[in-house]
Length: 173
Image 1 (cartoon, one colour):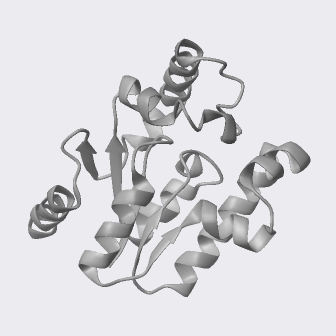
Image 2 (image 1 turned 45 degrees about the vertical axis):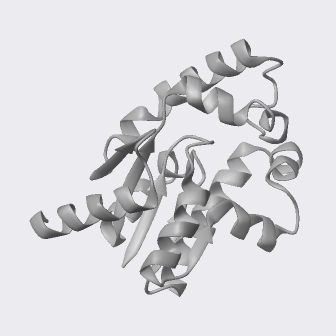
């Protein structure tokens, strides 16, 4: 089984991904953590020193490498991963993709205290600005996220709810 979690920053991809991987007995990989480990620098530092284009290309390369290395896994992608370099097509062709849909006000609540550490959110000085930035980002990414065959909408996204969703999908797919 290869299960890919996509969605906005703060959607819970890493948290739910770890629980799902444990439930299914497969490795968990956080794509951003994999990039940080390989690059030996933070995502913020990569954006600041190399730019977003470099990061997005590196992200695509690492994604393909990870998928080739693991015959089964749960993968938490970065929020923008599906939107660049045909990454979504790779995900859709090689495993089951699940979109974790979280309302923007909930994302603001989850991200407000860590936004300064996120390169694409760091310029938002307060909750109102963060909400505007998240709404703009979601609007640009929604068409990619909506192509995932599975969707779980917060607040009902628990590892058990996702397991049931996958089981139902597997019986009809």
